[in-house]
Amino acid sequence: MKSAFLSAVALAQASAQVSEQPSFDQWVAEFGMNSADETVRSKYEENVKIIDGLNAADSQATYRVNQFSGMTFDEFAAIYLTLKTSPVAASDFPELQLAQTAADGADWDVTPVKDQGQCGSCWTFGVMGAIEGMNKVQTGQEVILSEQQLVDCDDDGINDGCNGGLTDYAFKYLTGKDLWTLNSYPYVSGQSGHKNRCGHGSASGVTISGYFTVPGAGSGSQGDDALAKALMTGPVTITVAADNQFSNYHTGIMSGVPTRCDLNHAILATGFGSNFWKIKNSWGAQWGDGGFAKFERSTSGCGPFGIFFQDAGFQPKMGSMQLV
Image: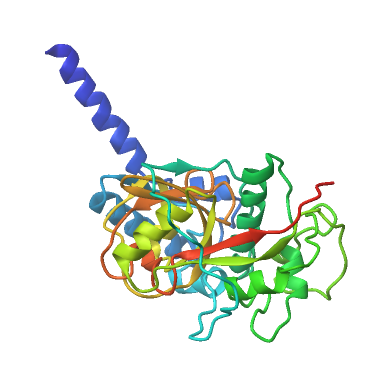
C-alpha cells in the first residue's frame, strides 16, 4: 500500500512538472528572445494562461510554451498560417485508388523535420516532404529536396512564396521538372522573408509525374477511411486549420480538437493508429514532439482540424527515379 501511495505521489509530481511553464526570463534564455521587451513579456504571460487552460482541458496531451509564445495568435497566423484556399483546384490528375483495406496503423520513416522560419511557405514543405517521403518509401534512399525551388520559381499567379500557396498547384508545377537538392539550392526565405529571383540548383534524380488526390472532401467518415488507406502506401500532404491548441502542442495525442470546415496550414501526414493521426510539421524540431504531433481521429464535421474539408490530401505520383 505504501509503494502504491508513493507511486501515485510521483505521478502527481511528474504531472505538475509537465504542466508548469517556464518563467518569462527562463523562456527568454531558452529561445534567445529580448528580455527587456515588456510588450513581449505581456504576450508571453497571456499565452501561458492559454497553455495552462489547454493542459487543464486535455488529459491526453501536454502543451508547452515554444518559440512562438511571445506573439499573439493573430501575429503568429499572419506569418505562419497563410495557406491559400480556392474553390477552383487543379484537377487534371487522378484520384488515388483505394481498394485495399486499411490496417491498424502505419508509421513511415520520413526525412528530418525542417523549419520554414518567418515565411508563410508551409505549402512548400507539405509538398516537398511528401515527395521526399515517398521517394524514401519506394527506394530506401534519403534525398533532401529544396523548398526554395518552389518559393522562388513557382510563380503562376496563385502560389506566392512567403505569402502562401496551394499544395495541389505546387504538385502541378513540379510535375516533370528536375527537383533540386537542398544543398545545391538552400532555403533562405526563413531569414529574408521573401522570395528571390528563380535560380538554378542540381537535379536530385527524383521526379514526379503528377499527384493523386486522396478522396473524401467534406465527409468525415469517407475522408477518415480514405486517408488511412492512402497512408498504407506512404506519407500524404494534408491541410489543417491550426489554432492555439495545435500551435502550443508538446506531446501526447491532442483530443477535443475542433472539426470546423476551415484551412490555414499545410503539413505532412506520416502515419496513424486506431485513435490518432501522426503528422510532421515545418516549425523546426523545437516545436511539438521533435517536430511531430499526434491528434485524435474524428469523423465529426470536416474532421479533426478540418482535414477533410476539401480533400483528405494529396500524394505524389513518383516518376522515373535515377538517384545521384
